[in-house]
Image (cartoon, rainbow, N blue to C red; front, top):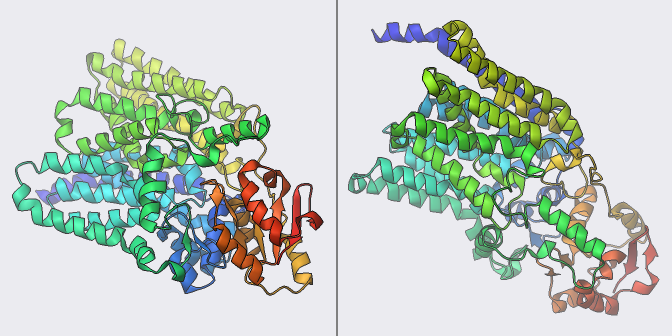
Length: 611
């Protein structure tokens, strides 16, 4: 009997597998197409990857610069994978971005399996398609930031958690704890937007079983803590004089970096130093800082943050669809929250609420709950598709009309996107209206089903033109990639990022004089140092930390380096040197460097001899 049931299901399963392979192939193409165009991608991370490849010490401590003055301000796991990739494929942008692109692709079948286990085959395929086409996920997978790897691990953790709790395989909770420890070592606390949903789900499903489940829960927490704290504990327990300084933590603490700069400061309201107005600076400088703050999700907290401006075309449709999907699923099945639906809904809603109100929320933070958005949107579409009687049959066309209408309006200021999105949105809305008509006049079920299937596909297809534009046309490379590439599709688009530091010209002059000092030169900015290191591999000392608005080294440490001759040159940007914020720093530099006789390298950059 069981064999006959399986053989009867084989055609449907084979068709589903073929569909999943096609969806995954499409997602892979969007993430891997023409990766050469990314250049070195995000130079902040490219600097660390190039530095970490120089020795096991640099590798272990995630050194930001070749002299191991600083660690980078993120955990090490994703960077280790990028270093391994560059060792295999050479130091180039493709090698650095490839781990992200592959992780983003792998998340698609993982999300399919998770949604399939929770809500059936149709929901699984719809979730895979939504994640494959989600523009924000495509953009993030084509960058060297860690978020795509984090999202892939989170998709796997969701699958493990549901299998452990609803599949009655509690030992899988141990694997879930270890995997969440790896998530911490990819992006610290960002990946833990899932934690409230996981706790609520486990508490609800294992209610009354706490005594029996306590040992496995405690062991899972122990595995999580041991895995999560391994790298930060290594850094913390190493004497400060024997390791690099911890970037962006005022107490030189890896624990502080995880909890403060990469934790509470992202959530709690307060001024973000790097984007704060510069006292005494020109209005144009402060206007540029304000505009940059918005691009990085600072100063725009509120209900419209994820739906308006550049975020609208990038992630508005999946967010809106997840909200509608949650409402439809609850309306269709009140018992739905008694199972895994509670986990997926709580995860999606926690992520949306947190990023709506967080102090700092660039678009790529959505990767922390992208699988939940895909699953909730898919569940809503699947439940609406199954509702074919009476007023309930209107659920699907109403969802599609709302999402297509939003997509149509969201691209109004983005001509390259509007050319693709608006025709698709109009076709989807038209199909939804036809579906309403077939319901009212009671068209034959096969024809009505065909219309409803077309309507079901309309929503994910509206995201395809945006993802195609990101893969084929969005500018890449430069200093630090703007977190939201959609800004370059505006009618009045900003200039694409480009090189600013004349590091090669400075090195030619320095090498001509045969300097063998510890540092080739110092430079007044961490990001400028990152650009120089990423492109040249030279040992460069960053002097100014833009993120904290303070010097990297205290005055005594800087003076020791200058007196000893370890920093023979200073490469500085006149535009920044004139700002009041760096006045104290340049007072020290002026005592040891010939600022007045500096060599002119470009309109604003100068090279001064020190020592």
